[in-house]
Amino acid sequence: MGKTVRAGTLLRRLLGLVACALCACYTPLPLDAGGMLRDLRRNRGGEGEASAGRLAEDEAVRLAVSTSAPVKVARAMVSEAKGGAVRARAFDNPEIRVDNAWLRRGTGTLDRDVYKLGLDFRVFLSALAERPARVGAADAAVTVAQASASLEEARVRREVRVAYGRVVTARERQALLTRLVEVRHERQATLAVSVQGGHSVAGDLELARVGEEEARDRLSRAEEEMSDALAALSRIFGKDLVNLDDLALPASPPCRPPPDDAQALEERILATSPALEQRRALHQRAREEARAEHLARWPRLKYLEVGYSRNHLVGSQTIVPGYEIEPRYYAWATHLHLALELPVWNWNGGRIEAALARAEGETARFRETLDATIAGLHRSLFRWNRSHNRAERAQSATLPAAQEALRVTRQAVEAGRLPITAALDAEEKVLVARLALLDDLLACRTAQLDIEAALGRDL
Image (tube, rainbow, N blue to C red; front, side):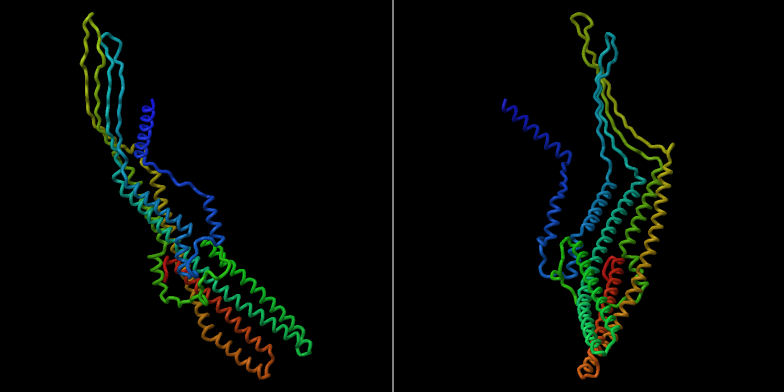
């Protein structure tokens, strides 16, 4: 009994292994939401894997692209589209059909039951005429997914670099505005003494107080800007950044001179823009689908079948007592079947019309995307030129002149020829000029990053 049970268990396991092999067993990984939440908490708490040293901008870009959830989703869609392309090239599996039946022939003395055995092999024939178009549409879908992934990567790169520029600008703006608050407070205190001595009017003192409060408001907004920029980086990396110790920051946002040839940039965008590549691939897919629908209206072979059948009588019958007659009747046959689909009732008109409309729509969408991309390019170039020119003038003329005026004014104050408020006013002009320069440098950098995002690569 025990041997029988063990043999039965072994047989069941063997059958299970065979079934698993035949069915290509696959167990998908479960969604571990709790584990994801624990990882998020560890990263938010700073317990995740720490990078060596401070995080530079280029390293941050590489890290963000490799860990960004939207980028991972877009890359998964590429793999899914490639699977669709493999499926479009595949042929349908053949079928083996077995027919095993008993046929009652009648109730007479010599009637016998007939045993029928049939074996058919059917091969499904794909639509060879439209097959290349279906494969082309699937390949275009792969290009669409790849362009979408490139578009998402370009967006993440821009977000990181813009956030770094905002952090640098906010840090420098905070330092300048902190000093501006101090300067205006000193000026207010000096005017207060002067008003008490009868050398200034009360209106000047009130204006100084308004100026100090304005500087404090600007400092508060700069602190908010710093918090927002750090929050943007925290969202990208999935880790809280509460200070600047983890970032390697330049002294100011870099500002390159803009390119001179706008038409060359237009040609580069036409060739490399992920948004245009995505639209171009969508248009190609729509064209291939329309071509396939046109070809699907013609007659086509659906399957080829080869079969074998055999019929024979079963049993014997007693005719005379003591004698039995066993009929030896059988018949066999082979056959070849071809199935041809005839477009009699349906000429695929609705699908053709819908596919043509999709193709025309994709043409219009490509033009719309091209217009918007080129218009955005020229707007970014305009901002880049203007902000770069302002930054150049500030660095070459405005700021040196303000610094020289401050030096001369301080000398005059030390010599007693001017009041101390003159030196404070001169220093305030230097601070205001440096604040304006920071805004221009950030605008210059942002315009460059906008163009690089449209190109899908660095300039």
